[in-house]
Figure 1: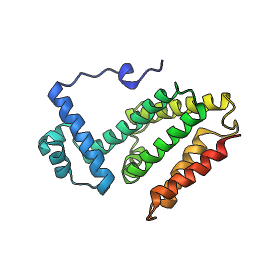
Figure 2 (figure 1 turned 180 degrees about the vertical axis):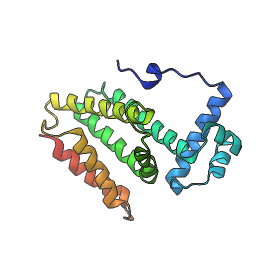
Figure 3 (figure 1 turned 90 degrees about the vertical axis):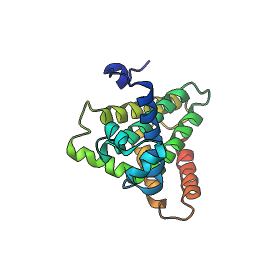
Figure 4 (figure 1 turned 60 degrees about the vertical axis):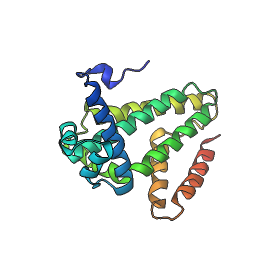
Length: 198
């Protein structure tokens, strides 16, 4: 069983009302950033969460803090999804499903991800930080899915997870201005998945 960041570095638990506000803010922020980009109104996010702007700033002192928290939650969701899929009786189907989740993640967070990734330049993603560890854990879980499918002879052994993820994100980039980007991206991803099979 893998060790999560929260297990490694336990933090003081939030009160129930503070946790509700925190979760509501993240949900509202995720929706706002997906719809309006990384410059979405913080006032509107607070209203969407049913809290005051002061509550937002208590949890997230800066816009970047909020962006990173939303991104971190999405990455954690991808890790958890991979760990769940490891019990699937269909190894290559499980890996393909995880790639489709990656596509959804990338589609919703393209503009947000650019802002979060800019934090690399500020050394915020240096080794040991929550962002760095979250991405490493997510990729580790995806790697376990890939290796399981490869061991079952269902996916070629000469492909690496990094290359596959780059193809997924490349599909998103070339289709983001297309009117039918979702359908086109899905078709292209199906081609990639077919090409992964021996």
